[in-house]
Length: 545
Image 1: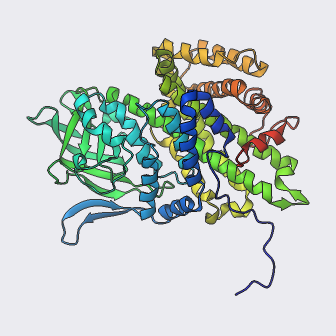
Image 2 (image 1 turned 60 degrees about the vertical axis):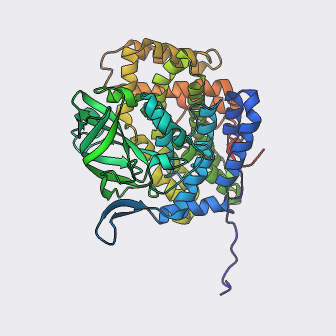
Image 3 (image 1 turned 30 degrees about the horizontal axis):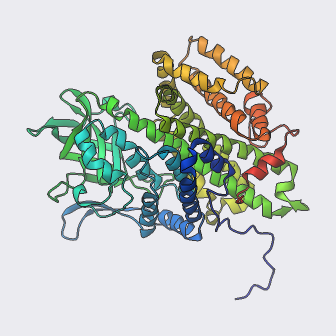
């Protein structure tokens, strides 16, 4: 029936049909900054293609369908045989297949691979974040598997493949494979050294049988899993194939799927092992050491994933405010709304710049860059992931009641926002990890201070923040109780130093004034009114340049 009571007007058009990469000035500049000139054309082309896909109506529909139709567990077939399979909506497979084809599990040996993959991950997960979990774990598993060259030779080509095959078959019969993780248990959570799952050695070299459970097993439809268990020599890392080479299913009993706050498209499971065949990775008793590089890589993806959620939330808020009128003018031109949008844009830009700097450090692979990552990754993971939820909530508010409605996509972003702060160690774990690096690895602190020192003299507020940070670092009294404050300051100083070096003056000025200079309130939208906020907002507007 035709509407006769009123004419629909003053509604922002949907933010669709655009290049998510090309419309992001901060990200495009970061790619140009961190990639060698000979790689740029190819990288831009691939990221632009991915960006157009991420901004398409088709990808938006896939994202909505994958979340409206969450995975379902089938424990048995019609005849009563145990199958333990998780069924996903076709949209999930399309999202995951597109990501794999775009190389989002292939970084370790590709020139500029981490910068290219991190940029791609930031672009594509704006379409839907849940399927980023198996992508991240598959990518991060590579350094752990390289502990055993024979295992790496067998599995690494499958994990870095550009082919996605959803069927469960022996990995050796597939052109591409995905890997999940099962680390935590009911009684210990993050304290994996309290794990009780037992690994009994078999006669075959490196072969064991597991008995026990995992409280959180991510992406249970994967082709294999890295798990921790207690071997005779202590906590050890193992590779658990979902299907054995002869085609039989490994013992992998899925008890239930978690009913989660967000991340609804992705399956997280409770699983049990009872005579489950596994292959040892690394030495017995060295399980944590074996997975440490994997943990660092997934933490970088937590930073990147949060930066992606922030960027999409800010893009939606700025887009809406550019078209929506209220009280005699466009929202984007109202001084108070402009302050809010500029504040959100600063947070988003700082997160993106930091994520890309960490990716560049991975590509550099030098001793000093590796030392820098030892502190910078947990500090960034702590701070950026914590800033995500309040930013998304404020961006949602910019859309008013429209933002609170599912059709806007903002509620899904908000439900997803807390996840990265929890995954791979919550805030306290990250803060304590930074303290361990400070106390045990002086080269890491030196590398961190050298990095922030590159911007010294460019902004007096940054200089003062660096001096204050050095004072805090010199005082180890009661260090654990104030670890969060210390790590927050480290992350802010690092972000400030990067923005002073690389961002436009109006962005660096606003960041240093608010985050480092104390000219800021307790909520977004409290920037000093004398700053060039219009330029900051315009820079964040999702328009290709």
